[in-house]
Length: 409
Image (tube, rainbow, N blue to C red):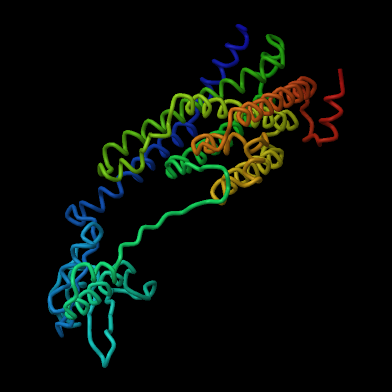
């Protein structure tokens, strides 16, 4: 046990002292702070108003002064001004950044023409749909009002519609916080894939130095593999916690209260969910870290690491995409159920299924059980191959050579 902690301590010190680790961590933290500060910066540039400034010009008084209703209905998203203005005047206002766009209303025969004026129409083919609907409804109400109908008759003509979505499947899906689910799946995958790849790099690098001879004579190969895996895992966990803490602080500092309530809706985050997420992170990390330890044992030159890691990287990417896309397309599908049990994808998939209430206790137990068995099998193979290949300084070994090493006593 003492040797295990010694290897862990050495690995942690070696990791945190690397310039690549320090620079990458600082860059990630700066990117997070920058991403959360963008809305605040845009708001300050716009004078504290994020709403799009739209001018509606009814020069022919087609709407007889009723366009204020459009202004009220869309006040949350748009800063609408109602005034008469020619195209040249509107052009000048857009040029001077007094407005972002304008809508000109004109009558032609029995039609009402709507001209949407923007600075560059390359990617814009029509006015925003919600504004068009509001303008259309306002004109309809104006004409109905001229018929002298009662309030009850008006309501019967223009009823309020309430829409809901029902499903035929038995599973009830709690969509939860989509932002948190996407962020969680992405963070778990990046943390697992990025830090596990460091294991093979560390093992291969030390095989080319005098450190390996010292380690071999002072402790067992199993202790070396497990110590390195745990050490790099602790560094990775520290960086993940640092990133999440920075994200939470940045969100509280830069986001508006309304947006903050949507982004950081913690109603689905329970102690049980946190425990399950940590469990899958640990097991997923060990699964891929030991696979990378296996590939790192097969090469003796740092330049061969990338090609040796390619099969494991492909497995990791397949696992991530299998879990992520089956979850976003249809979380109740058989494919997603398979992804939550398959050991290469369950660390990326199952936590989100738990958040949505789709995973039963039996599903979680089965998935964790398969992951634990996978970790034990991969650990046994990785440690045995590493033990027999530890002093190999030749060319990169093939899978056939690795199988022979595993068969050796």
